[in-house]
Length: 214
Image 1: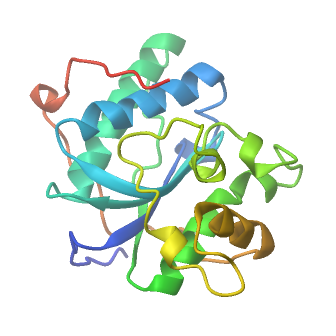
Image 2 (image 1 turned 30 degrees about the vertical axis):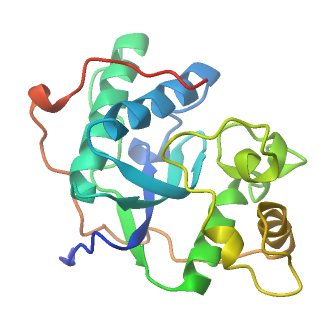
Image 3 (image 1 turned 180 degrees about the vertical axis):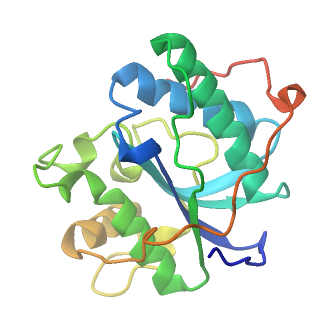
């Protein structure tokens, strides 16, 4: 049985969205770019902030806070846009996502560090690491923390996490990256059905203008 939870718009949430039956739905460079475009597309109408994100082959992670619109609306719009694109490109019929997404409130300083590090470490925590160096994984926010030369997406807040790292790490983005590389984290994932089910969103709410940042 799912539990209903009060949504707190001032809080960050760890969000996980998985492919139906945990099958790959983000398995190519173009898939990753389409998902990124979907977030940019919605951001320009319903702003939000992220501290971390990571797109994997059959799921993605976010550490996200909305700026007014409810989280379920943002997630519904993003997932609807990507699903429509996926179905068109691959002539796919039927749903591509699990019915519900996981969303856990993160309301402490340590929690933000723990969850963001967990998200960023995903590419090296697989049975066979996807990259040797986290800064080389292009479908997460970690490279933007690692190098100021990497263009950051407009919804990515790169200022907060560096202020939360404990000694002996420097309170810089490089210090935060070293924290991530040093500490292997464990956080709660979606072992149960999540309580925040995305609603049906009218087609009129799907934007028609793309914004490209890559």
